[in-house]
Length: 274
Image (tube, rainbow, N blue to C red):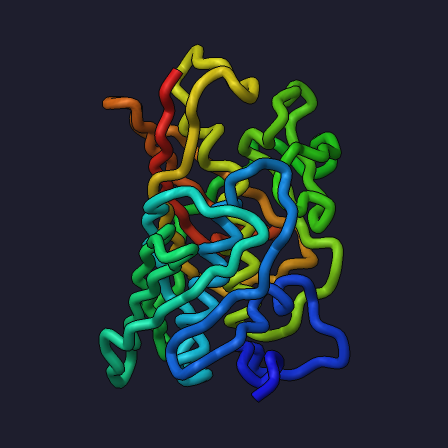
C-alpha cells in the first residue's frame, strides 16, 4: 500500500497539509514508521511532534466513528531528528463506546515515548464548562516568532513584555495553512500545538528562562479533547502553574476558541533543574 493509504487521513485531499504529512506512515499491521523530520531548532525532538504522531498511529487502528477523547503520554527519553521513529500500537480494548490504545515510540531500539489514548463514539449529553474571560485580548496581543519547532506554521500573539525565546501563556495562536476537515488529523494538530506553552509556564518563580541556564524538559503530557478544533481560527491558550517541588513543575492548561468556548484541557509536568 502507499503511504497515503496507510495514513490515518479519513478523507483524501489533492494536497496534504503538513500535519497530514507527518501522519503519512509506512504501515505493517499495527506497526508504523513515522515520516522523518530531519531538522529542528534543537538537538532534541519536539515532544508535541512525537505525541501527535503517536496519536495518529493509534487513531489509524480505530473506527472513524470514534473520535479522540484523551491521551496520556510519558516522554521516556529525548528523541533525535533525522532518525526513524517506530510506533507500535497495542489494541488494549475495543468497546461499544470507547476504544483504548497503547502506543510505544521507539528510536534506534530505545523507547522514547509511551502513550495511552482513548477514542469515544459521540453521545448527546449536557454541554457545560466554566467560562474564563481573557486577560489578554487578541487585539492587544503582540505578534511573536519564538524559537520553537515549525513556528512558521503558526500565527502567534502574546504579551508585549514576553521577551523570552519561547512563548509564555496566555497567548493566542492559529495555523496559517488549512488543515483537513478530519477529526483525527485536527486532534493531532491540537496535540502538536498544545506542547508549546506548558514548560515555561511550569518554571519555578525566579528561575532563569534563557537557554543554557539549566535543564528544562517535558516529563509527561495529557490532553482531553472536549469539542471540535478549527485550526485556522484564533485560539487562546491559558496555562497555569499549579505546583513546584522535587525539581518538577506542574502546569494545567485550557484551550479556548475565539468565542470563549473550551475546546481542550491539558496538563504537563516538566523537569526544572536550575
